[in-house]
Length: 629
Image 1: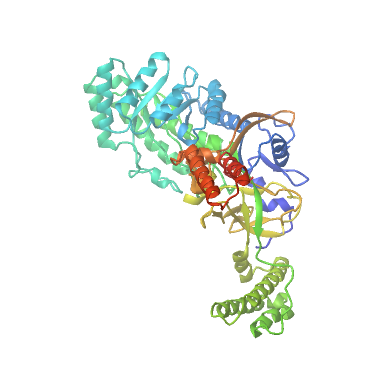
Image 2: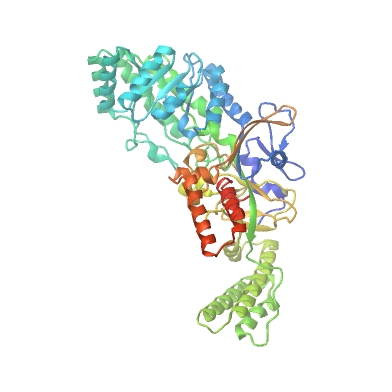
Protein backbone atom coordinates (compact mmCIF):
# COMPACT_ATOMS: atom_id res chain seq x y z
CA UNK A 1 0.00 0.00 0.00
CA UNK A 2 1.53 3.32 -1.06
CA UNK A 3 2.22 6.08 1.45
CA UNK A 4 2.99 9.72 0.70
CA UNK A 5 6.10 11.03 2.51
CA UNK A 6 5.06 11.73 6.11
CA UNK A 7 6.48 11.33 9.59
CA UNK A 8 6.84 7.57 10.15
CA UNK A 9 4.33 7.47 12.99
CA UNK A 10 1.63 9.30 10.99
CA UNK A 11 0.65 6.12 9.15
CA UNK A 12 -0.96 4.79 12.35
CA UNK A 13 -3.44 7.67 12.60
CA UNK A 14 -2.72 8.37 16.28
CA UNK A 15 -3.62 12.03 15.75
CA UNK A 16 -7.06 10.99 14.43
CA UNK A 17 -8.13 8.45 17.06
CA UNK A 18 -5.98 9.45 20.03
CA UNK A 19 -8.44 12.11 21.29
CA UNK A 20 -5.50 14.21 22.45
CA UNK A 21 -4.78 11.53 25.08
CA UNK A 22 -2.33 9.43 23.05
CA UNK A 23 0.65 11.08 21.35
CA UNK A 24 4.01 10.18 19.84
CA UNK A 25 7.20 11.67 21.29
CA UNK A 26 10.05 13.03 19.16
CA UNK A 27 12.05 9.89 19.91
CA UNK A 28 9.27 7.69 18.59
CA UNK A 29 7.51 6.44 21.71
CA UNK A 30 3.80 6.34 22.42
CA UNK A 31 3.06 8.72 25.28
CA UNK A 32 0.07 9.47 27.49
CA UNK A 33 -1.14 13.01 28.08
CA UNK A 34 -2.96 13.91 31.28
CA UNK A 35 -6.33 15.52 30.38
CA UNK A 36 -6.75 16.70 33.97
CA UNK A 37 -3.49 18.66 33.70
CA UNK A 38 -3.30 19.86 30.06
CA UNK A 39 -0.02 21.71 30.60
CA UNK A 40 1.79 18.66 31.99
CA UNK A 41 4.30 16.90 29.77
CA UNK A 42 3.17 13.66 28.16
CA UNK A 43 4.66 10.56 29.76
CA UNK A 44 6.28 7.78 27.73
CA UNK A 45 4.30 4.54 27.78
CA UNK A 46 7.45 2.39 27.26
CA UNK A 47 8.90 4.36 30.19
CA UNK A 48 5.92 3.38 32.33
CA UNK A 49 6.35 -0.25 31.31
CA UNK A 50 10.06 -0.12 32.20
CA UNK A 51 9.22 1.30 35.61
CA UNK A 52 6.60 -1.38 36.22
CA UNK A 53 9.01 -4.08 35.05
CA UNK A 54 11.53 -2.85 37.63
CA UNK A 55 8.80 -3.38 40.24
CA UNK A 56 8.26 -6.94 39.03
CA UNK A 57 5.07 -6.22 37.06
CA UNK A 58 5.41 -7.59 33.55
CA UNK A 59 3.48 -7.70 30.29
CA UNK A 60 1.04 -8.81 29.15
CA UNK A 61 -1.07 -6.47 31.21
CA UNK A 62 -4.16 -4.35 31.20
CA UNK A 63 -3.10 -0.80 32.02
CA UNK A 64 -5.88 1.37 33.40
CA UNK A 65 -5.46 5.14 33.43
CA UNK A 66 -7.51 6.57 36.27
CA UNK A 67 -7.06 10.11 34.93
CA UNK A 68 -8.83 9.13 31.69
CA UNK A 69 -11.81 7.75 33.60
CA UNK A 70 -12.08 10.94 35.65
CA UNK A 71 -11.85 13.01 32.47
CA UNK A 72 -14.62 11.15 30.62
CA UNK A 73 -17.03 11.37 33.55
CA UNK A 74 -16.40 15.11 33.86
CA UNK A 75 -16.64 15.57 30.08
CA UNK A 76 -20.10 13.97 29.79
CA UNK A 77 -21.58 15.59 32.88
CA UNK A 78 -20.24 19.04 32.10
CA UNK A 79 -21.32 18.78 28.46
CA UNK A 80 -24.89 18.07 29.57
CA UNK A 81 -24.65 20.92 32.09
CA UNK A 82 -23.49 23.33 29.38
CA UNK A 83 -26.18 22.18 26.92
CA UNK A 84 -28.86 22.63 29.59
CA UNK A 85 -27.65 26.14 30.36
CA UNK A 86 -27.40 27.09 26.68
CA UNK A 87 -30.86 25.76 25.82
CA UNK A 88 -32.61 27.17 28.86
CA UNK A 89 -33.67 23.66 29.82
CA UNK A 90 -35.57 23.62 33.09
CA UNK A 91 -34.60 20.14 34.22
CA UNK A 92 -31.28 18.63 35.29
CA UNK A 93 -29.08 15.69 34.29
CA UNK A 94 -28.37 12.52 36.27
CA UNK A 95 -26.06 10.03 34.59
CA UNK A 96 -25.66 6.40 35.62
CA UNK A 97 -22.92 3.93 34.72
CA UNK A 98 -24.03 0.46 33.54
CA UNK A 99 -21.99 -1.94 35.68
CA UNK A 100 -22.18 -4.64 32.96
CA UNK A 101 -19.80 -2.62 30.77
CA UNK A 102 -16.96 -3.10 33.26
CA UNK A 103 -17.69 -4.80 36.59
CA UNK A 104 -14.12 -4.65 37.90
CA UNK A 105 -14.00 -3.23 41.43
CA UNK A 106 -11.20 -0.76 40.71
CA UNK A 107 -13.24 0.68 37.84
CA UNK A 108 -16.60 0.90 39.62
CA UNK A 109 -15.02 2.32 42.79
CA UNK A 110 -13.38 5.13 40.86
CA UNK A 111 -16.48 5.89 38.82
CA UNK A 112 -18.40 6.36 42.06
CA UNK A 113 -15.59 8.51 43.49
CA UNK A 114 -15.25 10.74 40.43
CA UNK A 115 -19.01 10.94 39.88
CA UNK A 116 -20.06 12.07 43.34
CA UNK A 117 -19.84 15.76 42.55
CA UNK A 118 -22.24 15.17 39.65
CA UNK A 119 -24.68 12.93 41.56
CA UNK A 120 -23.61 10.20 39.17
CA UNK A 121 -25.22 6.81 39.79
CA UNK A 122 -25.10 3.18 38.71
CA UNK A 123 -27.21 0.87 36.55
CA UNK A 124 -27.71 -2.73 37.64
CA UNK A 125 -29.01 -5.36 35.25
CA UNK A 126 -28.81 -8.33 37.61
CA UNK A 127 -28.85 -9.23 41.30
CA UNK A 128 -25.05 -9.42 41.53
CA UNK A 129 -24.78 -5.97 39.98
CA UNK A 130 -27.37 -4.60 42.40
CA UNK A 131 -25.33 -6.03 45.26
CA UNK A 132 -22.28 -4.17 43.88
CA UNK A 133 -24.24 -0.92 43.55
CA UNK A 134 -25.59 -1.12 47.11
CA UNK A 135 -22.07 -1.57 48.47
CA UNK A 136 -21.18 1.96 47.35
CA UNK A 137 -21.97 5.17 49.18
CA UNK A 138 -23.46 7.19 46.35
CA UNK A 139 -24.24 10.91 46.32
CA UNK A 140 -27.63 11.78 47.86
CA UNK A 141 -29.35 12.47 44.53
CA UNK A 142 -27.67 9.68 42.58
CA UNK A 143 -29.83 6.96 41.06
CA UNK A 144 -29.54 3.20 40.97
CA UNK A 145 -31.47 2.12 37.89
CA UNK A 146 -32.44 -1.56 37.92
CA UNK A 147 -32.94 -3.01 34.44
CA UNK A 148 -33.24 -6.56 33.14
CA UNK A 149 -35.25 -9.55 34.30
CA UNK A 150 -36.02 -9.34 38.01
CA UNK A 151 -37.35 -11.95 40.42
CA UNK A 152 -39.04 -11.28 43.76
CA UNK A 153 -35.72 -11.38 45.66
CA UNK A 154 -34.21 -8.75 43.35
CA UNK A 155 -37.29 -6.54 43.69
CA UNK A 156 -37.43 -6.94 47.48
CA UNK A 157 -33.79 -5.88 47.89
CA UNK A 158 -34.32 -2.88 45.60
CA UNK A 159 -37.39 -1.73 47.57
CA UNK A 160 -35.77 -2.27 50.97
CA UNK A 161 -32.67 -0.32 49.93
CA UNK A 162 -34.80 2.84 49.86
CA UNK A 163 -35.04 2.60 53.66
CA UNK A 164 -31.34 3.53 53.94
CA UNK A 165 -31.44 6.37 51.45
CA UNK A 166 -30.82 4.80 48.04
CA UNK A 167 -32.81 6.12 45.07
CA UNK A 168 -33.29 2.66 43.64
CA UNK A 169 -35.56 2.63 40.59
CA UNK A 170 -37.14 -0.66 39.51
CA UNK A 171 -37.64 -0.42 35.76
CA UNK A 172 -40.57 -2.63 34.77
CA UNK A 173 -39.76 -4.72 31.70
CA UNK A 174 -43.10 -6.54 31.30
CA UNK A 175 -46.65 -6.80 32.70
CA UNK A 176 -45.60 -9.97 34.57
CA UNK A 177 -42.83 -8.04 36.31
CA UNK A 178 -45.40 -5.44 37.35
CA UNK A 179 -47.42 -8.23 38.99
CA UNK A 180 -44.32 -9.34 40.94
CA UNK A 181 -43.65 -5.79 42.13
CA UNK A 182 -47.24 -5.44 43.31
CA UNK A 183 -47.00 -8.75 45.20
CA UNK A 184 -43.75 -7.75 46.94
CA UNK A 185 -45.16 -4.31 47.80
CA UNK A 186 -48.26 -5.87 49.38
CA UNK A 187 -46.04 -8.18 51.46
CA UNK A 188 -43.56 -5.52 52.58
CA UNK A 189 -45.88 -2.54 52.83
CA UNK A 190 -43.11 -0.32 51.38
CA UNK A 191 -43.74 1.71 48.27
CA UNK A 192 -41.31 1.15 45.38
CA UNK A 193 -39.74 3.76 43.13
CA UNK A 194 -40.71 2.65 39.65
CA UNK A 195 -39.81 3.12 36.04
CA UNK A 196 -41.20 1.58 32.88
CA UNK A 197 -39.22 0.50 29.85
CA UNK A 198 -40.76 1.50 26.54
CA UNK A 199 -39.61 -0.23 23.37
CA UNK A 200 -39.01 2.36 20.65
CA UNK A 201 -39.85 1.53 17.04
CA UNK A 202 -37.05 3.68 15.62
CA UNK A 203 -34.08 1.48 14.66
CA UNK A 204 -30.55 2.83 14.66
CA UNK A 205 -27.87 2.01 12.09
CA UNK A 206 -24.54 0.33 12.78
CA UNK A 207 -23.27 -2.89 14.36
CA UNK A 208 -25.80 -2.83 17.21
CA UNK A 209 -28.96 -2.03 15.29
CA UNK A 210 -30.68 -5.13 16.71
CA UNK A 211 -30.48 -3.52 20.18
CA UNK A 212 -33.11 -1.04 19.00
CA UNK A 213 -36.48 -1.16 17.25
CA UNK A 214 -39.54 -3.24 18.00
CA UNK A 215 -37.55 -6.52 17.73
CA UNK A 216 -35.19 -5.48 20.50
CA UNK A 217 -35.05 -7.80 23.49
CA UNK A 218 -36.17 -5.62 26.39
CA UNK A 219 -39.04 -3.25 26.99
CA UNK A 220 -42.76 -3.16 26.30
CA UNK A 221 -44.79 -2.28 23.26
CA UNK A 222 -47.62 0.21 23.47
CA UNK A 223 -50.28 -2.35 24.35
CA UNK A 224 -48.20 -3.80 27.18
CA UNK A 225 -47.36 -0.30 28.41
CA UNK A 226 -51.03 0.63 28.76
CA UNK A 227 -51.71 -2.65 30.57
CA UNK A 228 -48.95 -1.91 33.11
CA UNK A 229 -50.27 1.62 33.70
CA UNK A 230 -53.72 0.17 34.40
CA UNK A 231 -52.27 -2.49 36.75
CA UNK A 232 -50.40 0.12 38.77
CA UNK A 233 -53.45 2.40 38.90
CA UNK A 234 -55.62 -0.47 40.15
CA UNK A 235 -53.00 -1.36 42.78
CA UNK A 236 -52.76 2.22 43.99
CA UNK A 237 -49.12 2.49 42.85
CA UNK A 238 -49.37 4.74 39.81
CA UNK A 239 -47.96 7.65 41.83
CA UNK A 240 -44.76 5.59 42.28
CA UNK A 241 -44.06 5.52 38.52
CA UNK A 242 -41.53 8.33 38.08
CA UNK A 243 -39.19 7.24 35.27
CA UNK A 244 -39.62 6.32 31.63
CA UNK A 245 -36.77 4.26 30.21
CA UNK A 246 -36.30 4.22 26.43
CA UNK A 247 -33.01 2.73 25.24
CA UNK A 248 -31.75 4.51 22.11
CA UNK A 249 -29.39 1.70 21.07
CA UNK A 250 -25.71 0.83 21.52
CA UNK A 251 -22.70 2.55 19.90
CA UNK A 252 -25.06 4.74 17.85
CA UNK A 253 -22.97 5.93 14.87
CA UNK A 254 -25.28 8.64 13.48
CA UNK A 255 -26.37 11.64 15.53
CA UNK A 256 -29.55 11.90 13.45
CA UNK A 257 -30.56 8.49 14.82
CA UNK A 258 -30.15 9.98 18.29
CA UNK A 259 -32.50 12.85 17.43
CA UNK A 260 -35.14 10.54 15.94
CA UNK A 261 -35.07 8.09 18.85
CA UNK A 262 -35.19 10.85 21.48
CA UNK A 263 -38.10 12.42 19.66
CA UNK A 264 -40.04 9.15 19.75
CA UNK A 265 -39.23 8.66 23.45
CA UNK A 266 -40.63 12.11 24.13
CA UNK A 267 -43.91 11.20 22.44
CA UNK A 268 -44.36 8.30 24.87
CA UNK A 269 -43.40 10.53 27.79
CA UNK A 270 -45.93 13.23 26.95
CA UNK A 271 -48.68 10.69 26.30
CA UNK A 272 -48.00 8.94 29.61
CA UNK A 273 -48.30 12.26 31.46
CA UNK A 274 -51.69 12.78 29.78
CA UNK A 275 -52.65 9.36 31.18
CA UNK A 276 -52.01 10.76 34.64
CA UNK A 277 -48.60 9.15 35.15
CA UNK A 278 -46.53 11.54 37.33
CA UNK A 279 -43.26 11.08 35.44
CA UNK A 280 -40.26 13.18 36.48
CA UNK A 281 -37.31 11.36 34.82
CA UNK A 282 -36.63 10.44 31.18
CA UNK A 283 -33.95 7.73 30.90
CA UNK A 284 -32.60 7.47 27.35
CA UNK A 285 -30.39 4.47 28.06
CA UNK A 286 -27.03 4.00 26.37
CA UNK A 287 -25.96 4.82 22.88
CA UNK A 288 -23.21 7.43 23.06
CA UNK A 289 -20.49 5.91 20.90
CA UNK A 290 -16.71 5.84 20.75
CA UNK A 291 -14.74 6.83 17.65
CA UNK A 292 -12.40 3.84 17.54
CA UNK A 293 -11.07 4.62 14.06
CA UNK A 294 -10.91 8.41 14.17
CA UNK A 295 -12.92 8.59 10.92
CA UNK A 296 -15.61 10.85 12.43
CA UNK A 297 -18.15 9.09 10.21
CA UNK A 298 -21.36 7.15 10.82
CA UNK A 299 -19.70 3.74 10.45
CA UNK A 300 -19.67 0.62 12.60
CA UNK A 301 -16.52 1.57 14.50
CA UNK A 302 -16.86 5.35 14.40
CA UNK A 303 -19.36 8.12 15.11
CA UNK A 304 -20.19 11.39 13.34
CA UNK A 305 -20.59 13.50 16.49
CA UNK A 306 -18.73 14.70 19.57
CA UNK A 307 -19.81 14.34 23.20
CA UNK A 308 -20.88 17.99 23.13
CA UNK A 309 -23.01 17.45 20.01
CA UNK A 310 -24.65 14.35 21.49
CA UNK A 311 -25.63 16.21 24.67
CA UNK A 312 -26.86 19.25 22.75
CA UNK A 313 -29.03 17.11 20.47
CA UNK A 314 -30.60 15.28 23.40
CA UNK A 315 -31.33 18.43 25.41
CA UNK A 316 -32.67 20.45 22.48
CA UNK A 317 -34.91 17.63 21.24
CA UNK A 318 -36.43 17.00 24.67
CA UNK A 319 -36.88 20.70 25.40
CA UNK A 320 -38.70 21.29 22.12
CA UNK A 321 -40.96 18.25 22.53
CA UNK A 322 -41.92 19.09 26.12
CA UNK A 323 -42.56 22.74 25.39
CA UNK A 324 -44.77 21.81 22.44
CA UNK A 325 -46.76 19.41 24.62
CA UNK A 326 -46.79 21.86 27.57
CA UNK A 327 -45.18 19.28 29.83
CA UNK A 328 -42.59 20.09 32.52
CA UNK A 329 -39.01 19.37 31.51
CA UNK A 330 -37.95 16.02 33.03
CA UNK A 331 -34.68 15.12 34.70
CA UNK A 332 -32.58 13.60 31.91
CA UNK A 333 -30.84 10.29 32.54
CA UNK A 334 -28.42 8.48 30.27
CA UNK A 335 -26.59 5.20 30.78
CA UNK A 336 -23.41 5.84 28.83
CA UNK A 337 -21.01 2.99 29.53
CA UNK A 338 -18.76 2.55 26.52
CA UNK A 339 -18.11 6.30 26.25
CA UNK A 340 -17.14 6.47 29.93
CA UNK A 341 -14.71 3.55 30.23
CA UNK A 342 -13.47 2.52 26.77
CA UNK A 343 -10.56 4.97 26.61
CA UNK A 344 -9.39 4.30 30.18
CA UNK A 345 -7.82 0.87 29.56
CA UNK A 346 -5.24 -0.50 27.15
CA UNK A 347 -3.78 -3.96 26.59
CA UNK A 348 0.01 -4.04 26.40
CA UNK A 349 1.99 -7.11 25.30
CA UNK A 350 5.39 -8.02 23.91
CA UNK A 351 6.11 -9.75 20.60
CA UNK A 352 7.77 -13.13 21.22
CA UNK A 353 9.00 -13.96 17.71
CA UNK A 354 8.11 -13.59 14.05
CA UNK A 355 7.44 -15.77 11.03
CA UNK A 356 8.77 -13.88 8.01
CA UNK A 357 7.48 -14.38 4.49
CA UNK A 358 10.59 -13.18 2.71
CA UNK A 359 14.35 -13.71 3.02
CA UNK A 360 17.37 -11.44 2.46
CA UNK A 361 19.06 -13.86 0.07
CA UNK A 362 18.54 -17.21 -1.64
CA UNK A 363 20.79 -20.30 -1.85
CA UNK A 364 22.61 -21.43 -4.97
CA UNK A 365 20.90 -24.05 -7.15
CA UNK A 366 22.51 -27.50 -6.80
CA UNK A 367 23.46 -29.47 -9.97
CA UNK A 368 20.97 -32.26 -9.25
CA UNK A 369 18.05 -29.94 -8.46
CA UNK A 370 14.88 -30.22 -10.53
CA UNK A 371 14.87 -27.81 -13.48
CA UNK A 372 12.00 -25.85 -11.95
CA UNK A 373 14.28 -24.87 -9.05
CA UNK A 374 16.56 -23.31 -11.67
CA UNK A 375 13.56 -21.70 -13.38
CA UNK A 376 12.49 -20.20 -10.09
CA UNK A 377 15.97 -18.82 -9.37
CA UNK A 378 16.15 -17.37 -12.92
CA UNK A 379 13.30 -14.96 -12.14
CA UNK A 380 15.83 -12.92 -10.21
CA UNK A 381 17.59 -12.11 -13.52
CA UNK A 382 14.69 -10.19 -15.05
CA UNK A 383 13.05 -8.77 -11.94
CA UNK A 384 12.41 -5.05 -12.49
CA UNK A 385 9.76 -2.35 -11.99
CA UNK A 386 8.21 -2.79 -15.42
CA UNK A 387 8.03 -6.60 -15.12
CA UNK A 388 6.89 -6.74 -11.48
CA UNK A 389 3.55 -8.49 -12.11
CA UNK A 390 5.18 -10.95 -14.53
CA UNK A 391 7.84 -11.86 -11.98
CA UNK A 392 5.21 -12.29 -9.26
CA UNK A 393 3.24 -14.61 -11.53
CA UNK A 394 6.32 -16.67 -12.54
CA UNK A 395 7.68 -17.02 -9.03
CA UNK A 396 4.32 -18.11 -7.66
CA UNK A 397 3.81 -20.58 -10.52
CA UNK A 398 7.19 -22.29 -10.12
CA UNK A 399 6.87 -22.42 -6.31
CA UNK A 400 3.41 -24.03 -6.54
CA UNK A 401 4.57 -26.54 -9.17
CA UNK A 402 7.53 -27.54 -6.98
CA UNK A 403 5.22 -28.05 -4.01
CA UNK A 404 3.07 -30.35 -6.16
CA UNK A 405 6.18 -32.29 -7.24
CA UNK A 406 7.27 -32.61 -3.60
CA UNK A 407 3.88 -34.03 -2.61
CA UNK A 408 4.18 -36.65 -5.38
CA UNK A 409 7.74 -37.58 -4.38
CA UNK A 410 9.64 -36.12 -7.37
CA UNK A 411 11.43 -33.45 -5.29
CA UNK A 412 13.18 -34.23 -2.01
CA UNK A 413 13.12 -32.29 1.24
CA UNK A 414 16.36 -30.35 0.74
CA UNK A 415 15.43 -29.31 -2.80
CA UNK A 416 12.09 -28.08 -1.52
CA UNK A 417 13.81 -26.15 1.27
CA UNK A 418 16.11 -24.44 -1.27
CA UNK A 419 13.13 -23.62 -3.50
CA UNK A 420 11.20 -22.07 -0.63
CA UNK A 421 14.21 -19.96 0.37
CA UNK A 422 14.71 -18.79 -3.23
CA UNK A 423 11.02 -17.86 -3.44
CA UNK A 424 11.21 -15.87 -0.18
CA UNK A 425 14.28 -13.98 -1.45
CA UNK A 426 12.35 -13.08 -4.62
CA UNK A 427 9.45 -11.85 -2.49
CA UNK A 428 11.83 -9.60 -0.56
CA UNK A 429 12.97 -7.95 -3.81
CA UNK A 430 9.40 -7.69 -5.14
CA UNK A 431 8.27 -6.04 -1.86
CA UNK A 432 11.10 -3.53 -2.07
CA UNK A 433 10.36 -2.63 -5.69
CA UNK A 434 6.62 -2.38 -5.05
CA UNK A 435 7.17 -0.11 -2.05
CA UNK A 436 9.28 2.28 -4.13
CA UNK A 437 6.78 2.39 -7.00
CA UNK A 438 4.48 5.41 -7.02
CA UNK A 439 1.76 3.59 -8.95
CA UNK A 440 -0.61 1.20 -7.16
CA UNK A 441 -0.74 -2.22 -8.86
CA UNK A 442 -2.36 -5.59 -8.29
CA UNK A 443 0.94 -6.77 -6.86
CA UNK A 444 0.41 -4.54 -3.82
CA UNK A 445 -2.84 -6.32 -3.00
CA UNK A 446 -1.22 -9.72 -3.56
CA UNK A 447 1.68 -8.84 -1.26
CA UNK A 448 -0.79 -8.30 1.58
CA UNK A 449 -1.21 -12.10 1.60
CA UNK A 450 2.50 -12.38 2.38
CA UNK A 451 2.39 -10.28 5.54
CA UNK A 452 4.61 -11.60 8.31
CA UNK A 453 3.13 -13.19 11.43
CA UNK A 454 4.20 -11.58 14.69
CA UNK A 455 3.61 -14.03 17.54
CA UNK A 456 2.50 -12.07 20.60
CA UNK A 457 2.20 -12.73 24.32
CA UNK A 458 -1.56 -12.45 24.85
CA UNK A 459 -4.80 -14.36 24.34
CA UNK A 460 -7.27 -12.83 21.91
CA UNK A 461 -10.11 -14.78 23.51
CA UNK A 462 -9.27 -13.62 27.03
CA UNK A 463 -8.34 -9.98 26.51
CA UNK A 464 -9.97 -8.93 23.20
CA UNK A 465 -13.07 -11.13 22.83
CA UNK A 466 -14.98 -8.61 20.71
CA UNK A 467 -12.18 -8.57 18.12
CA UNK A 468 -12.66 -12.30 17.66
CA UNK A 469 -16.43 -12.52 18.06
CA UNK A 470 -17.84 -9.44 16.31
CA UNK A 471 -14.91 -7.96 14.34
CA UNK A 472 -14.62 -4.99 16.67
CA UNK A 473 -11.77 -2.67 15.72
CA UNK A 474 -9.42 -1.22 18.30
CA UNK A 475 -6.46 1.04 17.59
CA UNK A 476 -3.27 -1.06 17.65
CA UNK A 477 0.18 0.46 17.35
CA UNK A 478 3.81 -0.37 18.24
CA UNK A 479 4.82 1.53 21.36
CA UNK A 480 8.37 2.34 20.28
CA UNK A 481 10.59 3.02 17.21
CA UNK A 482 7.90 5.26 15.70
CA UNK A 483 10.57 7.74 14.63
CA UNK A 484 11.72 5.05 12.18
CA UNK A 485 9.86 3.98 9.07
CA UNK A 486 8.41 0.48 9.57
CA UNK A 487 10.15 -1.98 7.30
CA UNK A 488 7.69 -4.88 7.50
CA UNK A 489 3.96 -5.59 7.53
CA UNK A 490 2.44 -8.20 9.81
CA UNK A 491 -0.67 -9.78 11.24
CA UNK A 492 -0.67 -10.50 14.97
CA UNK A 493 -1.02 -14.05 16.27
CA UNK A 494 -1.76 -14.68 19.92
CA UNK A 495 -0.30 -17.32 22.22
CA UNK A 496 -3.27 -19.71 22.03
CA UNK A 497 -3.25 -22.91 20.02
CA UNK A 498 -6.08 -21.76 17.74
CA UNK A 499 -6.04 -20.55 14.15
CA UNK A 500 -8.70 -17.96 15.07
CA UNK A 501 -6.30 -16.37 17.54
CA UNK A 502 -5.06 -13.64 15.24
CA UNK A 503 -5.73 -10.01 14.39
CA UNK A 504 -5.76 -9.14 10.69
CA UNK A 505 -7.68 -5.85 10.54
CA UNK A 506 -5.94 -2.68 11.63
CA UNK A 507 -6.80 1.01 11.86
CA UNK A 508 -4.38 3.17 9.88
CA UNK A 509 -4.49 6.85 8.96
CA UNK A 510 -5.81 6.06 5.47
CA UNK A 511 -8.34 3.38 6.46
CA UNK A 512 -8.60 -0.21 7.62
CA UNK A 513 -5.77 -2.49 6.51
CA UNK A 514 -5.36 -6.30 6.54
CA UNK A 515 -1.82 -5.89 7.91
CA UNK A 516 -0.01 -3.62 10.35
CA UNK A 517 3.19 -1.74 9.48
CA UNK A 518 5.81 -2.93 11.99
CA UNK A 519 9.57 -2.90 12.52
CA UNK A 520 12.01 -5.77 12.32
CA UNK A 521 12.23 -7.13 15.84
CA UNK A 522 15.18 -5.67 17.77
CA UNK A 523 17.55 -8.27 19.21
CA UNK A 524 18.48 -6.41 22.39
CA UNK A 525 15.08 -5.49 23.82
CA UNK A 526 11.38 -6.31 23.80
CA UNK A 527 9.12 -4.96 21.07
CA UNK A 528 5.81 -3.87 22.64
CA UNK A 529 2.37 -3.42 21.10
CA UNK A 530 -0.55 -1.51 22.58
CA UNK A 531 -4.25 -2.10 21.94
CA UNK A 532 -6.19 0.98 22.97
CA UNK A 533 -9.76 1.73 24.12
CA UNK A 534 -10.41 -1.73 25.59
CA UNK A 535 -12.10 -0.58 28.82
CA UNK A 536 -15.64 -1.44 27.67
CA UNK A 537 -16.68 -5.10 27.88
CA UNK A 538 -13.26 -6.63 27.04
CA UNK A 539 -12.22 -7.08 30.68
CA UNK A 540 -15.43 -8.93 31.48
CA UNK A 541 -16.26 -11.03 28.41
CA UNK A 542 -12.97 -12.96 28.10
CA UNK A 543 -12.90 -16.75 28.23
CA UNK A 544 -10.30 -19.31 29.30
CA UNK A 545 -9.29 -20.56 25.85
CA UNK A 546 -6.30 -22.90 26.38
CA UNK A 547 -6.68 -21.91 30.05
CA UNK A 548 -5.00 -18.55 29.62
CA UNK A 549 -6.40 -16.49 32.48
CA UNK A 550 -6.63 -12.82 33.32
CA UNK A 551 -3.51 -10.81 32.62
CA UNK A 552 -1.83 -8.61 35.19
CA UNK A 553 -3.90 -5.46 35.73
CA UNK A 554 -2.35 -2.16 36.79
CA UNK A 555 -4.17 1.08 37.61
CA UNK A 556 -2.15 4.28 37.49
CA UNK A 557 -2.87 7.97 37.84
CA UNK A 558 -1.05 10.53 35.70
CA UNK A 559 0.45 13.33 37.79
CA UNK A 560 0.55 17.01 36.91
CA UNK A 561 4.36 16.94 37.02
CA UNK A 562 4.51 14.43 34.16
CA UNK A 563 5.01 11.35 36.35
CA UNK A 564 2.58 8.67 37.47
CA UNK A 565 1.42 6.99 40.67
CA UNK A 566 0.73 3.26 40.93
CA UNK A 567 -2.73 3.05 42.49
CA UNK A 568 -3.41 -0.66 42.32
CA UNK A 569 -1.93 -3.91 41.07
CA UNK A 570 -3.91 -7.08 40.46
CA UNK A 571 -1.71 -10.04 39.67
CA UNK A 572 -2.85 -12.14 36.71
CA UNK A 573 -4.26 -15.60 37.17
CA UNK A 574 -1.93 -18.42 38.11
CA UNK A 575 -2.28 -21.84 36.53
CA UNK A 576 -3.57 -23.08 39.88
CA UNK A 577 -6.38 -20.51 39.80
CA UNK A 578 -7.53 -21.25 36.27
CA UNK A 579 -7.50 -24.98 36.99
CA UNK A 580 -9.93 -24.39 39.84
CA UNK A 581 -12.20 -22.44 37.45
CA UNK A 582 -12.63 -25.60 35.36
CA UNK A 583 -13.20 -27.88 38.39
CA UNK A 584 -9.68 -29.26 38.80
CA UNK A 585 -8.30 -29.26 42.33
CA UNK A 586 -4.63 -28.18 42.11
CA UNK A 587 -3.82 -30.27 45.17
CA UNK A 588 -5.27 -33.35 43.49
CA UNK A 589 -3.18 -32.63 40.38
CA UNK A 590 0.00 -32.42 42.46
CA UNK A 591 -0.88 -35.63 44.31
CA UNK A 592 -1.61 -37.50 41.06
CA UNK A 593 1.65 -36.32 39.49
CA UNK A 594 3.62 -37.24 42.64
CA UNK A 595 2.16 -40.74 42.54
CA UNK A 596 3.30 -41.24 38.94
CA UNK A 597 6.78 -39.92 39.82
CA UNK A 598 7.08 -42.39 42.71
CA UNK A 599 5.87 -45.22 40.51
CA UNK A 600 8.54 -44.31 37.95
CA UNK A 601 11.19 -44.52 40.68
CA UNK A 602 9.86 -47.91 41.74
CA UNK A 603 10.07 -49.26 38.18
CA UNK A 604 13.54 -47.79 37.66
CA UNK A 605 12.64 -45.38 34.86
CA UNK A 606 13.41 -42.38 37.09
CA UNK A 607 16.25 -41.99 39.55
CA UNK A 608 15.34 -41.00 43.09
CA UNK A 609 17.69 -38.00 42.99
CA UNK A 610 15.61 -36.50 40.16
CA UNK A 611 12.37 -36.60 42.15
CA UNK A 612 12.88 -33.23 43.84
CA UNK A 613 13.71 -31.46 40.56
CA UNK A 614 10.68 -32.90 38.78
CA UNK A 615 8.25 -32.11 41.60
CA UNK A 616 9.65 -28.59 41.95
CA UNK A 617 9.19 -27.96 38.22
CA UNK A 618 5.57 -29.15 38.42
CA UNK A 619 4.81 -27.01 41.50
CA UNK A 620 6.51 -23.96 40.00
CA UNK A 621 4.40 -24.31 36.88
CA UNK A 622 1.13 -24.75 38.74
CA UNK A 623 1.82 -21.63 40.78
CA UNK A 624 3.07 -19.56 37.82
CA UNK A 625 1.55 -17.05 35.38
CA UNK A 626 -0.45 -18.58 32.53
CA UNK A 627 1.34 -16.39 29.95
CA UNK A 628 4.85 -16.55 28.53
CA UNK A 629 7.45 -15.62 31.16
